[in-house]
Image (cartoon, rainbow, N blue to C red; front, side, top):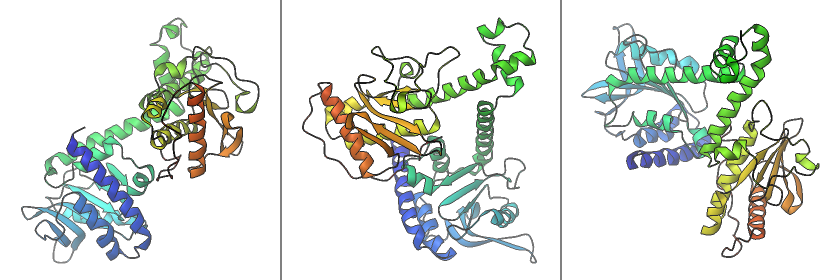
Amino acid sequence: MSPDLEEFRNRILAHAKLAVNRAPKVESEASTNASLVQPFLTVLGYDVTNPDEVSPEHHADFSDKYQNKVDYAILNQGQPVIAIESKRVGAAMKDDRGQLRSYFNASPTVKLGILTDGLRYELYADSDKPNMMDEVAFLRVDLSEIAKSGSIDDLTLEGVSAVRSGLFNPEDVGAEAKRKLMFESIVQLIKAFKTSPPDDFIRFVLDRTEMGKKMGKLTQKVVDANRDIVQTAMEAFVAREALARLGFAPKDVVKAPPDYQEPPATGTAEQAISLETEGGSLPPSGGELAALEYSKNRLFYLVRDDILFGEVSKIAFRKYKKSLRVYYGGLNAGSLFDYRERKDGLPLLNFPALNVEDVPYAASPALDDLLLKSFTQRATEAGVVFGGQPVLRSIKGGHPDASAG
């Protein structure tokens, strides 16, 4: 990623936090524009004080009888190229797409329409018919979610970056919108296949695997018998990809560590099963993935010693039927915590090193304290020498569920 784009990412993150803090004090559409929308346009590099660049209450007329206007128009050589319709923060935006569409369709030079309440931004193009605004937004940006997670994904960042002053190209918008809409439709299709693979897809997969080719004719009975394994395999693949991005090597996902022992039949490990069971590996659930990401990222933040910082990257995990064990070093001797969910869905953590059980999984200084104490204790027991006991930092934004898929 270029330094320029990385710097823009930091500006978006800073603006998201600022906008979320301001939003509760904004009570009208006018204050939404002044406190939220205009600062966002400034982040994009536009001079909101220059009417030759940002024109408020801009009109586009079909005729003397029908007049259309938007809250802001971004101008290029005197012609509007971006139309922005804003509503009071928190207001429903669905019914106001028609107002934006009427202006968009009345202005041949407009190639991008933006509907916003100051926190949520929907971007529309004319990818289906020239000069006719699409029914579906090709990009949605929610500053509340960005502020909550403290991150913005690369695709969204690149989409917003393309709207910046000096970078926006009206002629590219339609093609880019088509690409993003196609991308999203493929993602949704794959998601549907992962959740409930249709018969044709199962046949497609089986027909292209060595084991599947040995099954002979792929009858409905064969398809039904292998439905679960195809679904589980897809879930495992998605989990591995997500875990690889968190720094867990593929071997951590599918193979037991050398010192593997079955955990004692107590607490969350009583339903333990090997990942190398016949029929494929067992992928972590969405909640378990969120706990893994949160705990590892928090420890990277909490430890202040360089040696300990390097040791955090050695954290591994073991998936069981009804729980997940996160550990450092040995599976049992180095256990940091066990994650499980109650029947009502409440996630709980057990910390064997500290003899602490059933701690609700929720971002807090108390959870930070337990993570840090458990990790430093296991590191000390493993013979790691570091410069004194780390000092607990106060929690800084985020939420354990912010990155769950």
